Length: 436
Image (cartoon, rainbow, N blue to C red):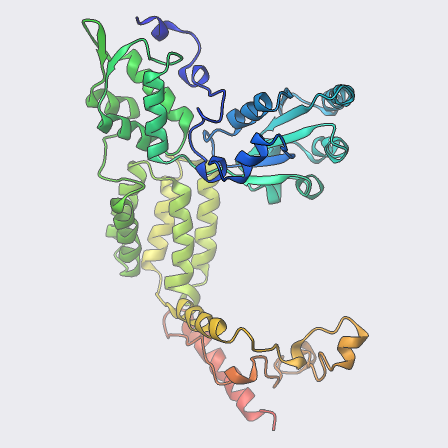
């Protein structure tokens, strides 16, 4: 009955799905109307890049595609595969293609391949010798050669939700490949704790369940998993924080409003509530970047630099090391002078933009790359600001209907007071030199 508990193969490996029906998550791509589902079902799979965080099923999905399309599956490693190995596999793929058999080349962590390695795939992707499936946790726009990227369809895989992970854990408990032959008592609350701790990563959730099963209480012919065991296993208590529910938004709101109110102690407290409950530090860092411009803006432009640097630090360090980087940024933002002038300026401009979509760009600031455009007076009368003593001209750059608009209205907070004085000087000069 408990023979599966002694299996040397990890639970995550045993439970790897073989079909799309067994696959958990990515419903935006794999529901019956999803583009990727239709491509797989119709055997029209192109070369593609799966971009998403760890543990969301990138490798598993590539293997399912290979099985579904009856293609050879070649797994490449960025660490061990050089140009010679790549070319050898490509030559074999060319031969297989002559016999009508497809070859799927899966490149995990494709962002780790250097330019020469990536270029080696290019001619074989172009002529269809291989279907390349790359997986990356990094933005492929920056990490994959543009020539190769242009020949691949990019699919964004999302972190698994708590609901997805609970579904996966229940599968593990029922499946003969998992613990289906063993009676295990475990509550839904505990499964939610495991899913919350896993932070969207299927592998982490299954590894955690496996550890709990191995350390479960044995009673008669079944096992019991206790909440205390879960807390010891994940080294944290189940805090009141549902990353997909109301409390998630309540606490991020509490952090934002505490910083806005310059309450540094409250801000640090709410930050720690999120991090210790398993929140993704990059999510928090992105919110801080938004805050830096929305609530501080020109009152202290360094706030934006610091929050972007904080995001990079979180990316490099991960948890728990990056908790001090986030605390650094939260402290800076809390104590910085506040201004929402930038936020208000955009909202005012957005309102006008949506109601004046037909307003033409003034001729004077239009580009004139062709003779016809020049004949139509595109760019006629344009004044190059750098050619003037003041580095300002009296051109009107807004549509005529909006010439009186003043979207940006700086405050006197922090360095924005200097910005306010500069804006007054510019407006005074333009008023004195206004075109007649």
